[in-house]
Length: 147
Image 1 (cartoon, rainbow, N blue to C red):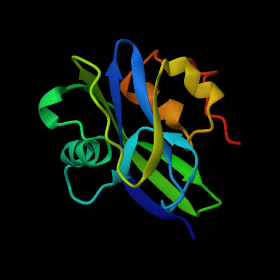
Image 2: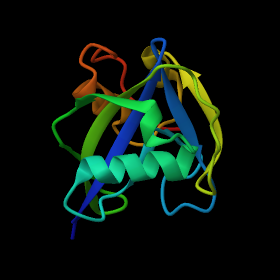
Image 3: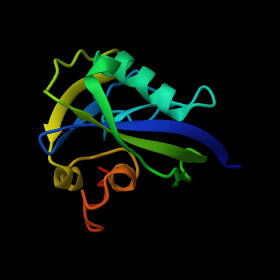
């Protein structure tokens, strides 16, 4: 039986690059995969949840962020986990590249051009989530790679 799970995914953008975070061994799923800032939707307001997750996972304060676009939610099926993730994607612009302070969920971070997602082992449909809030950032061939 597939369970539907609402989540938020927030991309931080500066100078044409986005921040990606490598998921650690203590998280519940997709260990070692690259992702954007993400988390379970714990209320009715996806934007408020995205802002909370950004501050918790990166240390970047809300005052440093400018919402560029909220994408339409997309469904991401994962038969292995029996989950249908309902992803609420957001894109935030930064005036400068901030100091990133990772929390326990991640082991590393990188600033990458969107097309680089195709060469990274990412969480499912990360490129699709980015396209939902930054159309044209990655072509249809820039799909996620699972290792």
